[in-house]
Image (tube, rainbow, N blue to C red; front, side, top):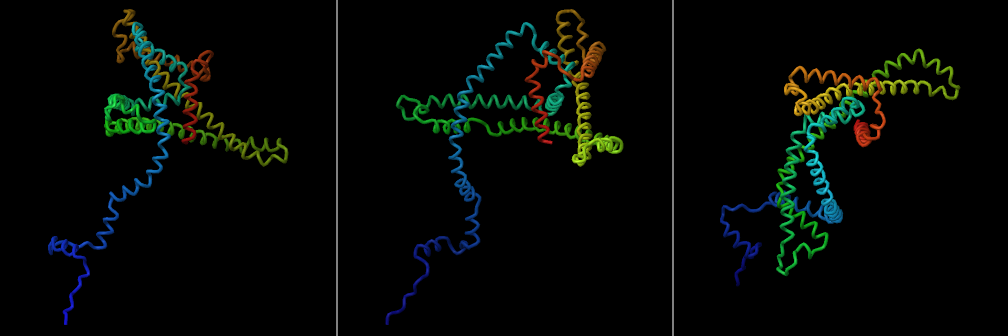
Length: 361
């Protein structure tokens, strides 16, 4: 009889591979297989496959953004060059002195109209101004690096046909190519730190405005509540008797919310008063620095006049600041003609900030 030949359940190749590993080698288990199937790299590949179609759909928007940047860039640098030219023309007149003096004069006599802008600027100056200057300088250097890399890429002729590669591709490919060039040339950590510094300053501004708005509204509602307690006893019954019967149901809520509106209006006026006092003090300091420095340089005053710890400098600030604050308060914080037209852009920014704070509140 022929002896039965044992048949192995494993293929020959698998058996040989197992023998090569040796007796101490671990065999794969179901748990290790499942964990390898869920490793971070596999998840990243899967996630990339999910979002890739959305990135492809976003490519036209990136192309439009690239076209807009290409179109706007010459005008932006032309505007900067023009402003630098104007600044150079003004140098004989020392603009670093008279421009702050003009801004200080406006703050002294009309700063109460722009208390939201003053609060935002003061918060940014205290918290994020120095960091923002450093951040903007970093971004400027990063932009210079990216622009130099892009200019170098414009000269690349990889196929050697005498025509630059960037001139042989369509707009979509050009945008993607430039994005790749910029990504390789710019330091991402530097850009991230710069953007974080700017964001921190803006966050401080938003927080300051929200706190001031909340304090103003809280004070207004408190004052309105006190006024409503008085009006509910003495005024509401009179209005109720004078109102036709069909509309008497509106008397109580109208008096209640009317008192609240009046309270918030009073609180808003008090906020403008405090801001006018602050802007007068800050504006008087700016005005004194510019005007007194001009007078000292032309030898109208002694050099000690610009000493910010000196008696003359501080007396000038107190007197001029009080004059401006009283002028604002006496006029009811109104802008006279033609300043109401000249400062219209600033007023629009002020109203925009107030509306933004109202939305955030």
